[in-house]
Image (cartoon, rainbow, N blue to C red):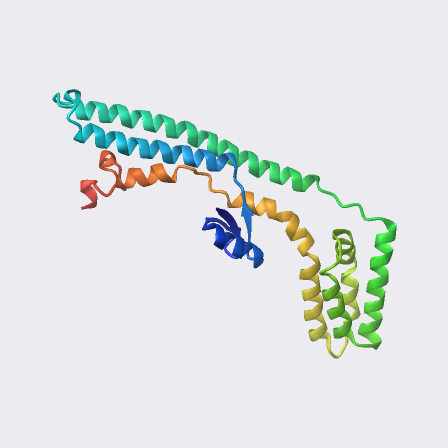
Length: 240
């Protein structure tokens, strides 16, 4: 199973139990890559088929492979077929990745949240009460209450409060506990801003997608003797 890891901002393949544990712990988001996974699996199957066929060519008692030069001929033919298949699949993979990235950007650009006059007024009232608390009451307690309540606010209220938040910062000017209050306001900002971060998640996941789905093929080119002419192949005489 694949999961987008919030900490590393990468897509990782992990066991199902670990993926669910990370998601439930708020450390990641399970992702279904659909056709991308299908293409990766197709490339993996093609590579497995290549390995098996090469073993057959080099170990079979079939007389056709015993003719001088036959092994090299059939190996080259096999290799050309694999290269063509992987190239075609990788081209499809890149096209899908680019399409997903573009779609995520377009979806974000077209998102809009209508904030009614009523919602704006309600947010303004909440901030007015907090400004009064900063000036004449318990500023830390008032902001802590807002941070706690933010867990239950809908997207519209969070966005409305974000638009008013600068008024809290202005109200702390000259306050004897200004630094402490400013730290609390910053915490409130991050809490309210989660609504925007949530909307950015599809973009982050799309940007984390690898442009390549041919890992199995690339591992083959580095380890299989038929690719010994490749610079990074372990059988390349130049690496000895």
